[in-house]
Image (tube, rainbow, N blue to C red):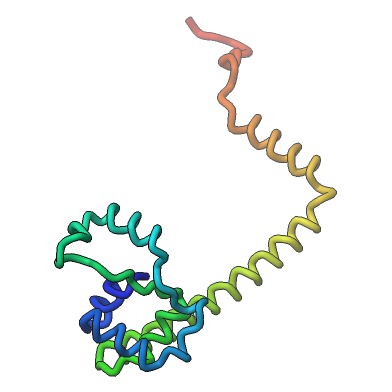
Length: 151
């Protein structure tokens, strides 16, 4: 995410966020945070429609971009009530994601075991489904009446 979007999320000004990052640069290695390259910055400016770079208005500095880990670290270096709440929420989300991934691993293992068990039963299962389909299909011709018919 870009620094100005994170500033809105944390309820601080962009310059305040960048100042906190500069004070704690050791906590932001390149895989946590980087500054956009000049070509990326120019492309990004065109996409969001910012003002002319020749004038003294609009976005003139390349923004900082934060990875998932950088966002978590940022919430620990900002000193605001909202940053604390965001930090707590991030930690809860990480725990929930780990639980979900664990559940998916267990489910994948159970499916693999089930596949291993039924490998030899494919033909039998196909025959069962064919028989069920025959029973569910409507009769092709009405049954004939046999016996006495009073007319």
